[in-house]
Image 1: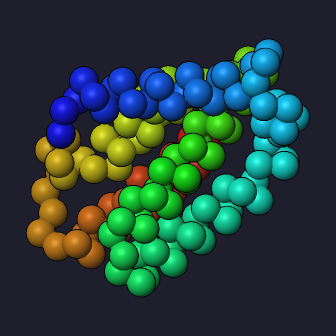
Image 2: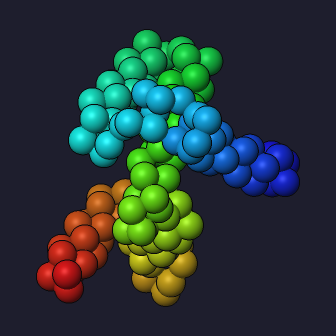
Length: 131
């Protein structure tokens, strides 16, 4: 995969969201809130699941794009409110995945997927306790 194209495509989609929400953009998109968008987010999740269950890779690709758009849309609204932004979202999930995979990124040893699942649950529970 071409990482330069990947970066450019992600930035272009985020800028598209900004244009839709901004002056001269789409009146419907500009009016959306996290509350009004959540039904679209859920709908896109179901459509991804349906495409996966049907074993239709091209449909999965398309539906993942729709779902990603909703994620970026919500992240942009968070940025508009000064609550969080896409960068914080991306960095946060990266840190979490590294933390939850100590058998890959740390020194922990596991032999089975079941051990991974137990470790994941333990780490997640510890994170909840720290919040």
